Image 1 (cartoon, rainbow, N blue to C red):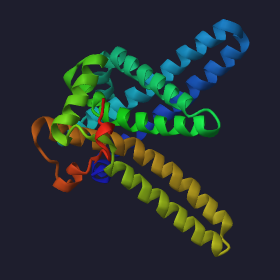
Image 2 (image 1 turned 135 degrees about the vertical axis):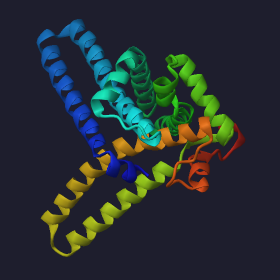
Image 3 (image 1 turned 90 degrees about the vertical axis):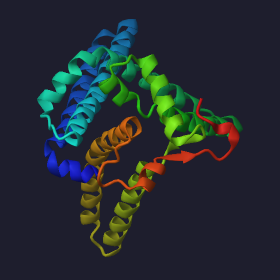
Image 4 (image 1 turned 30 degrees about the horizontal axis):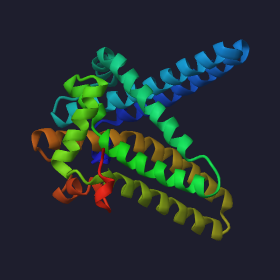
Length: 261
């Protein structure tokens, strides 16, 4: 489905490229200025810079989401038109990006430690991460298409997942499977090329494949989310998706105690 949307809307690939470039520029500027300031001001600047980077990343996803929804409705948008729709939602998207960043930092902090404490921390971080991913899966389209604030969008996203996929889901399954298959295929081809003595060619293939997968993933993720959101809120299943694809969008919990909170 993502490839079909890309075929019809190739300009979508411009969005992750532009977003990555903007985040890179913001990172470099923040690092240079923070180095010059030092102390508490540098810390404050890094916080502001990280919020700006998170906002840019989420705004890029919102642009793609608007274009995908318009494409599905038969009313295609340009990147500029989608960006104008995103503009009024920037404060909410900034808040959502900041919250996502904070949760990501907290999850990473849980993974630190050595020995049994570190192992338990990594296990706990894994469960928190998959539960968070399920609970927040529809936050972006809810913000974009329903105009809700972050807190209301979180509640709405969780309600959509529970209503259509059950209370026992713990993470996204179908998209992760696709990414895993792409990674495995890339590694297999690279190993074959390396074994044949084409080491430089193998390295080039891996590099190109990684860039291609990052770009495709940056578009595929919002496409997948918008398609599922459209199905969950309107009951319309987009051509190219089978009922089993929708049913497998989330993984069921393994134990009754692992429900999304």
